[in-house]
Length: 468
Image (cartoon, rainbow, N blue to C red; front, side, top):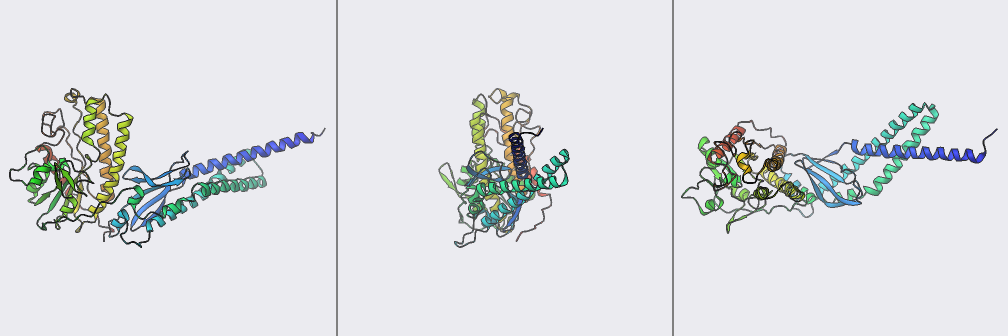
Protein backbone atom coordinates (compact mmCIF):
# COMPACT_ATOMS: atom_id res chain seq x y z
CA UNK A 1 0.00 0.00 0.00
CA UNK A 2 1.42 3.45 -0.93
CA UNK A 3 1.63 6.25 1.62
CA UNK A 4 -0.95 9.04 1.17
CA UNK A 5 0.47 12.03 -0.69
CA UNK A 6 -0.26 14.63 2.04
CA UNK A 7 1.69 12.60 4.60
CA UNK A 8 4.67 12.24 2.24
CA UNK A 9 4.60 15.96 1.49
CA UNK A 10 4.61 16.74 5.22
CA UNK A 11 7.62 14.49 5.74
CA UNK A 12 9.50 16.18 2.91
CA UNK A 13 8.65 19.60 4.30
CA UNK A 14 9.77 18.55 7.76
CA UNK A 15 13.01 17.13 6.35
CA UNK A 16 13.70 20.30 4.37
CA UNK A 17 12.91 22.42 7.43
CA UNK A 18 15.26 20.33 9.57
CA UNK A 19 18.00 20.62 6.95
CA UNK A 20 17.49 24.39 6.75
CA UNK A 21 17.68 24.71 10.53
CA UNK A 22 20.81 22.53 10.57
CA UNK A 23 22.44 24.70 7.88
CA UNK A 24 21.51 27.82 9.85
CA UNK A 25 22.96 26.39 13.07
CA UNK A 26 26.17 25.39 11.27
CA UNK A 27 26.43 28.89 9.78
CA UNK A 28 25.98 30.59 13.15
CA UNK A 29 28.53 28.29 14.82
CA UNK A 30 31.04 28.77 12.00
CA UNK A 31 30.67 32.57 12.11
CA UNK A 32 30.98 32.67 15.90
CA UNK A 33 34.11 30.53 15.79
CA UNK A 34 35.61 32.60 12.96
CA UNK A 35 35.18 35.84 14.94
CA UNK A 36 37.19 34.32 17.77
CA UNK A 37 39.72 32.57 15.53
CA UNK A 38 40.49 35.34 13.03
CA UNK A 39 43.83 36.91 13.95
CA UNK A 40 44.09 40.66 14.40
CA UNK A 41 45.47 42.33 11.30
CA UNK A 42 48.72 44.27 11.41
CA UNK A 43 49.06 47.73 9.90
CA UNK A 44 52.12 49.98 9.86
CA UNK A 45 51.67 53.71 10.32
CA UNK A 46 54.58 56.13 10.59
CA UNK A 47 56.82 53.24 11.57
CA UNK A 48 54.45 52.18 14.38
CA UNK A 49 52.69 48.82 14.40
CA UNK A 50 48.97 48.66 15.19
CA UNK A 51 46.83 45.53 15.15
CA UNK A 52 43.16 45.67 14.18
CA UNK A 53 40.42 43.22 15.14
CA UNK A 54 36.98 43.22 16.72
CA UNK A 55 35.64 43.53 20.21
CA UNK A 56 33.57 40.74 21.71
CA UNK A 57 30.01 40.83 20.32
CA UNK A 58 27.73 43.16 22.26
CA UNK A 59 23.97 43.15 22.71
CA UNK A 60 23.81 46.92 22.24
CA UNK A 61 23.13 48.34 18.78
CA UNK A 62 25.97 50.87 18.98
CA UNK A 63 28.86 51.82 21.20
CA UNK A 64 32.59 52.59 21.35
CA UNK A 65 35.38 50.40 20.10
CA UNK A 66 38.42 49.51 22.19
CA UNK A 67 42.06 50.55 22.22
CA UNK A 68 44.45 48.28 24.12
CA UNK A 69 47.05 50.56 25.67
CA UNK A 70 49.65 49.28 28.15
CA UNK A 71 47.37 46.41 29.14
CA UNK A 72 44.31 48.63 29.63
CA UNK A 73 41.21 48.50 27.39
CA UNK A 74 40.18 52.09 26.70
CA UNK A 75 36.92 53.00 24.94
CA UNK A 76 37.27 54.96 21.71
CA UNK A 77 35.72 58.38 21.35
CA UNK A 78 34.09 57.17 18.14
CA UNK A 79 30.74 55.39 18.42
CA UNK A 80 30.31 52.47 16.03
CA UNK A 81 26.98 50.96 14.94
CA UNK A 82 26.34 47.26 15.37
CA UNK A 83 27.40 44.58 17.85
CA UNK A 84 30.91 44.18 16.35
CA UNK A 85 33.23 47.16 16.74
CA UNK A 86 36.93 47.76 16.09
CA UNK A 87 39.50 46.68 18.63
CA UNK A 88 42.93 48.23 18.19
CA UNK A 89 46.22 47.53 19.92
CA UNK A 90 49.45 49.50 19.78
CA UNK A 91 51.78 46.52 19.53
CA UNK A 92 55.15 48.00 18.60
CA UNK A 93 56.65 51.45 19.08
CA UNK A 94 59.40 52.76 16.84
CA UNK A 95 61.14 55.86 18.14
CA UNK A 96 61.44 58.03 15.05
CA UNK A 97 60.71 61.53 13.81
CA UNK A 98 57.07 60.64 13.07
CA UNK A 99 56.21 59.33 16.55
CA UNK A 100 54.96 62.67 17.88
CA UNK A 101 52.63 63.18 14.91
CA UNK A 102 51.37 59.62 15.29
CA UNK A 103 50.38 60.26 18.91
CA UNK A 104 49.40 63.94 18.77
CA UNK A 105 48.39 64.40 15.11
CA UNK A 106 50.08 66.26 12.30
CA UNK A 107 50.16 70.03 12.60
CA UNK A 108 49.70 70.72 8.90
CA UNK A 109 46.10 71.57 8.06
CA UNK A 110 46.19 69.57 4.83
CA UNK A 111 47.94 66.53 6.32
CA UNK A 112 46.57 63.26 5.03
CA UNK A 113 44.88 61.17 7.68
CA UNK A 114 47.15 58.22 7.11
CA UNK A 115 46.37 56.59 10.45
CA UNK A 116 42.63 56.47 9.77
CA UNK A 117 43.11 55.07 6.27
CA UNK A 118 45.41 52.32 7.49
CA UNK A 119 43.03 51.40 10.33
CA UNK A 120 40.15 51.21 7.84
CA UNK A 121 42.22 48.94 5.59
CA UNK A 122 43.05 46.71 8.56
CA UNK A 123 39.35 46.46 9.43
CA UNK A 124 38.54 45.37 5.87
CA UNK A 125 41.37 42.83 5.84
CA UNK A 126 40.15 41.43 9.15
CA UNK A 127 36.71 40.70 7.72
CA UNK A 128 38.17 39.29 4.52
CA UNK A 129 40.01 36.74 6.66
CA UNK A 130 36.96 36.25 8.89
CA UNK A 131 34.82 35.48 5.83
CA UNK A 132 37.31 32.89 4.60
CA UNK A 133 37.61 31.28 8.03
CA UNK A 134 33.82 31.19 8.45
CA UNK A 135 33.47 29.39 5.12
CA UNK A 136 36.22 26.93 6.02
CA UNK A 137 34.61 26.31 9.41
CA UNK A 138 31.24 25.56 7.77
CA UNK A 139 32.86 23.08 5.37
CA UNK A 140 34.63 21.30 8.24
CA UNK A 141 31.45 21.04 10.31
CA UNK A 142 29.30 19.86 7.42
CA UNK A 143 32.00 17.42 6.28
CA UNK A 144 32.01 15.93 9.77
CA UNK A 145 28.21 15.58 9.68
CA UNK A 146 28.33 13.96 6.26
CA UNK A 147 30.98 11.50 7.40
CA UNK A 148 29.03 10.68 10.57
CA UNK A 149 25.86 10.02 8.56
CA UNK A 150 27.84 8.25 5.78
CA UNK A 151 26.20 10.27 3.05
CA UNK A 152 27.06 9.46 -0.56
CA UNK A 153 29.58 11.65 -2.31
CA UNK A 154 27.06 13.49 -4.47
CA UNK A 155 24.85 14.31 -1.49
CA UNK A 156 27.90 15.39 0.52
CA UNK A 157 28.97 17.80 -2.22
CA UNK A 158 25.48 19.30 -2.39
CA UNK A 159 25.45 19.65 1.40
CA UNK A 160 28.85 21.36 1.43
CA UNK A 161 27.91 23.77 -1.36
CA UNK A 162 24.58 24.63 0.27
CA UNK A 163 26.21 25.11 3.67
CA UNK A 164 28.97 27.30 2.25
CA UNK A 165 26.48 29.50 0.39
CA UNK A 166 24.22 29.89 3.44
CA UNK A 167 27.14 30.66 5.76
CA UNK A 168 28.72 33.24 3.47
CA UNK A 169 25.36 34.85 2.67
CA UNK A 170 24.58 35.27 6.37
CA UNK A 171 28.15 36.38 7.17
CA UNK A 172 28.38 38.96 4.38
CA UNK A 173 24.90 40.25 5.17
CA UNK A 174 25.80 40.64 8.82
CA UNK A 175 29.03 42.47 7.90
CA UNK A 176 27.14 44.87 5.63
CA UNK A 177 24.56 45.59 8.31
CA UNK A 178 26.81 45.79 11.38
CA UNK A 179 30.35 46.61 10.28
CA UNK A 180 30.29 48.37 6.93
CA UNK A 181 30.19 51.89 8.40
CA UNK A 182 33.26 51.40 10.58
CA UNK A 183 35.87 52.09 7.83
CA UNK A 184 34.35 55.52 7.09
CA UNK A 185 34.43 56.36 10.80
CA UNK A 186 38.00 55.12 11.20
CA UNK A 187 39.15 57.30 8.31
CA UNK A 188 38.28 60.35 10.41
CA UNK A 189 41.11 59.50 12.83
CA UNK A 190 44.42 61.31 12.39
CA UNK A 191 46.09 60.61 15.74
CA UNK A 192 46.09 58.14 18.59
CA UNK A 193 45.11 60.95 20.95
CA UNK A 194 41.99 61.62 18.92
CA UNK A 195 41.04 57.95 19.01
CA UNK A 196 41.21 57.64 22.81
CA UNK A 197 39.97 61.14 23.57
CA UNK A 198 43.15 62.56 25.04
CA UNK A 199 43.82 66.25 24.49
CA UNK A 200 47.45 66.87 23.51
CA UNK A 201 49.51 68.59 26.15
CA UNK A 202 50.37 72.18 25.30
CA UNK A 203 53.85 72.86 24.01
CA UNK A 204 55.50 74.94 26.74
CA UNK A 205 58.95 76.45 26.42
CA UNK A 206 60.54 77.40 29.71
CA UNK A 207 62.75 80.42 29.75
CA UNK A 208 66.10 80.14 31.44
CA UNK A 209 69.72 79.67 30.74
CA UNK A 210 70.88 76.32 29.33
CA UNK A 211 72.37 73.83 31.77
CA UNK A 212 74.95 72.03 29.63
CA UNK A 213 76.84 70.55 32.60
CA UNK A 214 73.84 68.63 33.99
CA UNK A 215 74.32 64.90 33.41
CA UNK A 216 71.05 63.52 34.83
CA UNK A 217 67.52 64.85 35.38
CA UNK A 218 64.97 63.55 37.91
CA UNK A 219 61.28 64.31 37.39
CA UNK A 220 58.12 63.24 39.12
CA UNK A 221 56.14 63.43 42.32
CA UNK A 222 56.76 63.51 46.07
CA UNK A 223 58.62 60.19 46.03
CA UNK A 224 61.29 61.65 43.76
CA UNK A 225 61.22 65.00 45.55
CA UNK A 226 61.91 63.37 48.92
CA UNK A 227 58.79 64.69 50.67
CA UNK A 228 59.08 64.76 54.46
CA UNK A 229 62.87 64.76 54.51
CA UNK A 230 65.12 67.78 55.25
CA UNK A 231 65.34 70.52 52.64
CA UNK A 232 68.64 72.33 52.25
CA UNK A 233 68.73 75.60 54.18
CA UNK A 234 69.78 77.70 51.18
CA UNK A 235 67.35 76.18 48.72
CA UNK A 236 65.22 78.22 46.33
CA UNK A 237 61.55 79.07 46.99
CA UNK A 238 60.55 76.61 44.25
CA UNK A 239 62.60 73.84 45.84
CA UNK A 240 60.97 74.48 49.20
CA UNK A 241 57.47 74.63 47.68
CA UNK A 242 58.02 71.29 45.96
CA UNK A 243 59.55 69.59 49.01
CA UNK A 244 62.78 68.62 47.24
CA UNK A 245 65.06 67.16 49.87
CA UNK A 246 68.81 66.99 50.22
CA UNK A 247 68.25 63.30 51.06
CA UNK A 248 66.36 62.48 47.83
CA UNK A 249 67.61 59.70 45.58
CA UNK A 250 68.61 62.39 43.07
CA UNK A 251 71.18 63.63 45.57
CA UNK A 252 72.31 60.06 46.28
CA UNK A 253 72.90 59.41 42.58
CA UNK A 254 74.79 62.68 42.28
CA UNK A 255 77.07 61.74 45.19
CA UNK A 256 77.74 58.18 44.03
CA UNK A 257 78.47 59.05 40.38
CA UNK A 258 79.94 62.52 40.74
CA UNK A 259 77.09 63.80 38.54
CA UNK A 260 75.36 67.11 38.36
CA UNK A 261 71.73 66.06 38.83
CA UNK A 262 68.84 68.42 38.20
CA UNK A 263 65.93 67.46 40.47
CA UNK A 264 62.68 68.87 39.06
CA UNK A 265 60.32 66.61 41.03
CA UNK A 266 57.51 68.27 42.93
CA UNK A 267 55.10 66.96 45.55
CA UNK A 268 51.59 66.56 44.17
CA UNK A 269 52.74 66.41 40.54
CA UNK A 270 50.78 64.46 37.95
CA UNK A 271 51.55 64.00 34.28
CA UNK A 272 49.08 66.68 33.18
CA UNK A 273 49.81 69.09 36.03
CA UNK A 274 53.49 68.85 36.77
CA UNK A 275 55.37 66.98 34.07
CA UNK A 276 53.73 68.13 30.83
CA UNK A 277 51.83 71.15 32.12
CA UNK A 278 52.42 73.74 34.84
CA UNK A 279 51.58 72.91 38.46
CA UNK A 280 50.08 75.15 41.11
CA UNK A 281 51.91 74.30 44.33
CA UNK A 282 50.85 76.25 47.42
CA UNK A 283 50.04 79.31 45.31
CA UNK A 284 53.29 79.12 43.36
CA UNK A 285 53.21 78.18 39.65
CA UNK A 286 55.83 75.51 38.92
CA UNK A 287 56.87 75.30 35.24
CA UNK A 288 56.34 71.99 33.41
CA UNK A 289 59.09 69.61 34.43
CA UNK A 290 59.66 68.16 30.96
CA UNK A 291 60.05 71.60 29.44
CA UNK A 292 62.48 72.57 32.21
CA UNK A 293 64.43 69.35 31.62
CA UNK A 294 65.17 70.43 28.04
CA UNK A 295 67.47 73.08 29.41
CA UNK A 296 69.80 70.19 30.34
CA UNK A 297 70.52 69.46 26.71
CA UNK A 298 73.50 67.20 27.43
CA UNK A 299 71.84 65.03 30.10
CA UNK A 300 72.34 61.35 29.34
CA UNK A 301 69.88 60.00 31.96
CA UNK A 302 66.26 60.92 32.72
CA UNK A 303 64.57 59.33 35.77
CA UNK A 304 60.81 59.60 36.32
CA UNK A 305 58.53 58.77 39.25
CA UNK A 306 54.88 59.32 38.38
CA UNK A 307 51.44 57.73 38.67
CA UNK A 308 50.44 57.72 42.32
CA UNK A 309 48.95 61.22 42.26
CA UNK A 310 47.28 60.56 38.89
CA UNK A 311 45.40 57.67 40.50
CA UNK A 312 44.66 59.48 43.76
CA UNK A 313 46.69 56.96 45.76
CA UNK A 314 46.73 59.02 48.97
CA UNK A 315 42.96 59.43 48.79
CA UNK A 316 42.50 55.69 48.33
CA UNK A 317 44.65 54.95 51.39
CA UNK A 318 42.74 57.46 53.53
CA UNK A 319 39.43 55.99 52.39
CA UNK A 320 40.60 52.47 53.21
CA UNK A 321 41.51 53.60 56.72
CA UNK A 322 38.00 54.79 57.58
CA UNK A 323 35.76 52.63 55.37
CA UNK A 324 34.54 49.14 56.36
CA UNK A 325 35.94 47.89 53.04
CA UNK A 326 37.70 49.58 50.14
CA UNK A 327 36.81 47.30 47.21
CA UNK A 328 33.17 48.40 46.83
CA UNK A 329 31.79 49.08 43.36
CA UNK A 330 32.16 52.86 43.59
CA UNK A 331 35.84 52.88 44.54
CA UNK A 332 36.67 50.09 42.08
CA UNK A 333 34.99 52.03 39.25
CA UNK A 334 36.84 55.18 40.32
CA UNK A 335 40.17 53.36 40.26
CA UNK A 336 39.52 51.94 36.78
CA UNK A 337 38.50 55.37 35.50
CA UNK A 338 41.63 56.99 36.93
CA UNK A 339 43.81 54.20 35.54
CA UNK A 340 42.34 54.66 32.05
CA UNK A 341 42.94 58.41 32.22
CA UNK A 342 46.49 57.83 33.44
CA UNK A 343 47.21 55.43 30.57
CA UNK A 344 46.28 58.11 28.02
CA UNK A 345 48.48 60.73 29.69
CA UNK A 346 51.27 58.21 30.15
CA UNK A 347 51.35 57.63 26.39
CA UNK A 348 51.82 61.37 25.87
CA UNK A 349 54.66 61.50 28.39
CA UNK A 350 56.44 58.46 26.95
CA UNK A 351 56.20 59.74 23.38
CA UNK A 352 57.72 63.08 24.37
CA UNK A 353 60.47 61.46 26.43
CA UNK A 354 61.28 59.25 23.45
CA UNK A 355 61.83 62.23 21.16
CA UNK A 356 64.06 64.29 23.47
CA UNK A 357 67.19 65.57 21.71
CA UNK A 358 70.13 63.27 22.22
CA UNK A 359 67.89 60.33 23.17
CA UNK A 360 68.98 60.03 26.83
CA UNK A 361 68.45 56.77 28.68
CA UNK A 362 65.09 56.89 30.44
CA UNK A 363 64.14 55.16 33.69
CA UNK A 364 60.49 54.95 34.70
CA UNK A 365 60.58 53.89 38.34
CA UNK A 366 57.89 51.56 39.62
CA UNK A 367 56.56 52.06 43.15
CA UNK A 368 57.87 50.14 46.15
CA UNK A 369 55.46 48.12 48.31
CA UNK A 370 55.23 50.00 51.63
CA UNK A 371 53.23 47.34 53.49
CA UNK A 372 54.86 43.94 53.29
CA UNK A 373 53.94 40.77 55.21
CA UNK A 374 54.35 42.29 58.70
CA UNK A 375 51.01 44.05 59.14
CA UNK A 376 50.24 43.97 62.89
CA UNK A 377 50.99 47.66 63.40
CA UNK A 378 48.64 48.63 60.56
CA UNK A 379 45.58 46.82 61.87
CA UNK A 380 45.26 49.28 64.72
CA UNK A 381 44.90 52.26 62.34
CA UNK A 382 42.16 50.66 60.25
CA UNK A 383 44.29 49.00 57.56
CA UNK A 384 43.23 45.37 58.00
CA UNK A 385 44.78 42.54 55.94
CA UNK A 386 41.85 42.45 53.44
CA UNK A 387 42.18 46.20 52.88
CA UNK A 388 45.94 45.93 52.43
CA UNK A 389 45.39 43.17 49.88
CA UNK A 390 43.24 45.56 47.83
CA UNK A 391 45.74 48.41 48.10
CA UNK A 392 48.65 46.15 47.17
CA UNK A 393 46.72 44.79 44.20
CA UNK A 394 45.98 48.28 42.90
CA UNK A 395 49.60 49.31 43.36
CA UNK A 396 50.66 46.22 41.39
CA UNK A 397 48.23 47.17 38.61
CA UNK A 398 49.76 50.64 38.39
CA UNK A 399 53.26 49.14 38.31
CA UNK A 400 52.20 46.77 35.52
CA UNK A 401 51.06 49.74 33.40
CA UNK A 402 54.28 51.64 34.16
CA UNK A 403 56.43 48.64 33.24
CA UNK A 404 54.53 47.77 30.05
CA UNK A 405 54.62 51.31 28.75
CA UNK A 406 58.33 51.63 29.51
CA UNK A 407 59.07 48.32 27.80
CA UNK A 408 57.17 49.28 24.65
CA UNK A 409 59.27 52.44 24.40
CA UNK A 410 62.45 50.52 25.26
CA UNK A 411 62.91 52.39 28.55
CA UNK A 412 64.04 50.87 31.84
CA UNK A 413 61.48 50.26 34.59
CA UNK A 414 63.07 48.93 37.80
CA UNK A 415 61.12 48.06 40.94
CA UNK A 416 62.71 49.18 44.24
CA UNK A 417 62.64 46.30 46.69
CA UNK A 418 61.90 47.27 50.29
CA UNK A 419 61.52 43.66 51.46
CA UNK A 420 62.43 43.39 55.14
CA UNK A 421 62.24 47.16 55.54
CA UNK A 422 58.56 47.87 55.09
CA UNK A 423 56.19 49.24 57.72
CA UNK A 424 56.01 47.25 60.96
CA UNK A 425 59.65 46.12 60.62
CA UNK A 426 62.48 47.16 62.94
CA UNK A 427 64.18 49.37 60.31
CA UNK A 428 61.50 50.59 57.89
CA UNK A 429 62.40 52.42 54.68
CA UNK A 430 58.95 54.04 54.81
CA UNK A 431 57.79 56.96 56.97
CA UNK A 432 55.11 56.10 59.53
CA UNK A 433 51.90 57.98 60.40
CA UNK A 434 53.60 60.28 62.91
CA UNK A 435 56.31 61.29 60.42
CA UNK A 436 56.10 64.37 58.16
CA UNK A 437 55.10 62.36 55.03
CA UNK A 438 53.51 58.98 55.88
CA UNK A 439 54.17 56.09 53.47
CA UNK A 440 56.92 58.05 51.68
CA UNK A 441 60.52 56.78 51.67
CA UNK A 442 62.87 57.59 54.52
CA UNK A 443 66.44 58.63 53.75
CA UNK A 444 67.38 54.94 53.64
CA UNK A 445 64.41 54.29 51.35
CA UNK A 446 65.65 57.02 49.01
CA UNK A 447 69.07 55.38 49.03
CA UNK A 448 67.45 52.03 48.15
CA UNK A 449 65.73 53.65 45.14
CA UNK A 450 69.04 55.21 44.07
CA UNK A 451 70.77 51.81 44.24
CA UNK A 452 67.96 50.25 42.19
CA UNK A 453 68.35 52.89 39.49
CA UNK A 454 72.12 52.56 39.59
CA UNK A 455 71.84 48.82 38.99
CA UNK A 456 69.38 49.39 36.12
CA UNK A 457 71.78 51.76 34.39
CA UNK A 458 74.38 49.00 34.26
CA UNK A 459 72.10 47.07 31.90
CA UNK A 460 73.28 47.61 28.29
CA UNK A 461 71.06 49.98 26.32
CA UNK A 462 68.76 48.26 23.78
CA UNK A 463 69.64 48.61 20.08
CA UNK A 464 68.49 51.87 18.56
CA UNK A 465 66.51 50.19 15.76
CA UNK A 466 64.16 52.60 14.07
CA UNK A 467 65.55 55.71 15.73
CA UNK A 468 66.06 58.55 13.31
